[in-house]
Length: 302
Length: 314
Image (cartoon, one colour):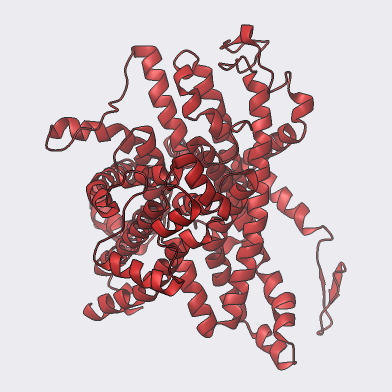
């Protein structure tokens, strides 16, 4: 098979296809037809830049405690004010983006990979294997999102890596259902039967034929999962069961220990949550738009 | 219909068995350092051997499993390490509180979402539609615990007002009881309404394009009558499933909102059990929640089958 500009059809005609990479096409359609998706993409981009360049962008050291500068309101010196220890909130929120992105990206990478493997294998082999595996998925889905993640955290103990793992396990359970559904419909296609007739083994069929055809739902799963993963991390940090308290997180800044200061300093209650909502909104909008562009069959599913 | 109910219940049995197996494994999967922390932080026993005995970990695994299951079916969930109370009693007392809070939230969510979704659909692509659509997207993205934080901070600063934070029982004062639940239920319900709003709008748009709607309008029926009698009935069928699926979001929400508003429900108990490393309670509550969710899902499927007869024959 060739991906040249013109493909010779056996009838003798020529079909010209545009010589542009697929991803470029997706970006162009995003810009032209999905204004909300574009806004989402910009928010995500800004957040990524903030996370990567946090040490350069932060005006102050986020751990620096300045007793004389406690609970200062937002101003030109401290954009988002200072907290009860005199630490600059803007710098802390910038560094908070790091942990949110790190947990979000890592857990989504793990969960999407796991969900794709489990879903494809379960759908491909079917029969008893599928039935038993799906009962495990059913059982884990009986524990709703946050409860499942909390339960896994209770077993693993706290720490950033355990947060990532817990969110990843939680997301891969429900994700594997979506991929299994997609893989089942691919499995029923004639070309899979053709491959089998030609003597292709299980591994070859799964890797060469099934996996490439469930990539679109897998990518949309990942892009929609990012917002949810960031929300899950901040919920855990808010409850005090996530990352260690000395790491600045958006959820942690809103948590119990800072609450008594919020009545004197509204900015402590406002900015972390606002930035968190904006980030989740951005990922959700980008995810929605990508889903519509990549996989029209999933449109409206949520 | 009876056959459908029977089939649905039978299908739940293997899932239930796997749930029990998974929940049973919670204690057995604990790494050794957590067992050490249970002694060091919480003083649950004098040493590891004593704690293992207390947790019933001394017996061989199959014996433990049978002991545990036979307790569970008799309603004996064991004793909490933290409160030293029977966990079954604790759950029995707390479940009605959480159930009421959850239902209240779902009700508020529906009351917001359905009218907004309908208006959004019949005024498609007007400024009102755009406003409502942005609202629904916003409600999906804004975390509930932030909304709750804002509610507890800004009204105090501006007007010196705080929502009630001490639980009032139904028997003490029914009106105050309902008012106590109002604010947390409004916040959780608002979060739930985003999805329902979007779906109601999409479903209405789809149904409004059908021929029978044009026929109804052509007969000279008023717009109100066409919408309520002809369109809404059909549009709401999938919406009911989504409301049912929200049980998951509701249960997750109870953990957060019950903690913030100190509501004495199951969600708060579960959170505290995890915080205090009270693993027998974690185990029992996880099982309790899973079975509740399973039963609610079956109930929703049955309701769905009653409303839409096509389901039963699928």
